[in-house]
Image (cartoon, rainbow over all chains, first blue to last red):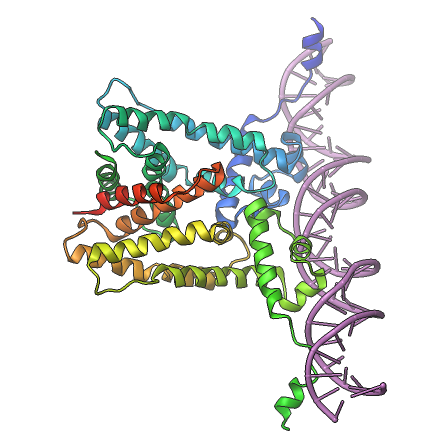
Length: 200
Length: 200
DNA sequence: AACTTAAGTGAATAATTATTCACTTAAGAA
DNA sequence: TTCTTAAGTGAATAATTATTCACTTAAGTT
């Protein structure tokens, strides 16, 4: 038995599911009341733990918010390029990614709201913000491929990208606010508008 | 001399410019630090008045935020239909409004951020939210005119509207974050993407 | 000029909320 | 079973922040 095992022996282990509960509770609260309306006490009770326990998992509110932000960013990055295969024809691959963006926004709406809300908050550090910006990079590559193949318009990449994403974000946001159901049919309509705009 | 004038005579009048200063200071702070990062003390000092003075103009933080929200909503509604004339050909009229939306987002960016941020906050009352939703009504009428004239696609109005607005919002938001300059040329490119998407 | 009244002030107070801590509980080792 | 250690608790404390208030200033009336 060495120092290492001595150091970590005789331990009541952390319940790893708690982090998940804390995150889930925080997302729910931010969706309902916004980032200005959440307290550590509320997060704790929504996660069904004591306030003190929250501080075993996160040193401070700051750290909790940043950790959750990072988690959300990872979740979105994982979805964006799921099932994308560069060897597919451009439009097919483009649609895969476009649908992934739509999927993330609809199925992880609280994460999207949380990221939007917290981006401007005093909690998120500059480093976290910087990494987030870099997430857009592969999407730039995508539209640049489309331009190179003369399939989509030869406009500024920034314009093409924000155009590609804007409709999705706006649609999902307003759907959730107004209770409008997001159907396959509506998604298809939105894709067509988007594609007709982009195509050369 | 009647009761009315008696009651209101011998008064040091409120400095009406102060409300404006308070609003401007609040918008600036929310843009920089988010709705979670503003305190009455900071608002007061940014507006160069004492904290107590703030409470002469607004009963509470709640009231201040709601009043500013209403002000922002009015400012946006005023711009949206500026110079629009229903007797113009559809595309011409559409472009006038589209450019107005773009103008509001770029020239009153802090207002747009403030409205986005506060919409989900505990400050905004349900009434305020409800009135805000109604603001979209004339824009619905616009896309429905386009559909009736068979100029734009016969898709769901909600889809058409969120599509019309999404690109603008996303573009301006990311421009401001990343420091990308918003030029006439880029605006024109965005309009073309948007129009090509919408047209029948 | 003297008077009245409300604006304006900022330190004091009241609420709210983040964080700590003395204590309890339970997992695993001996 | 006993022992050790960290998780878990929630009331107590520390910070922060909204709101008040006793006081000062200045506009307008007489």
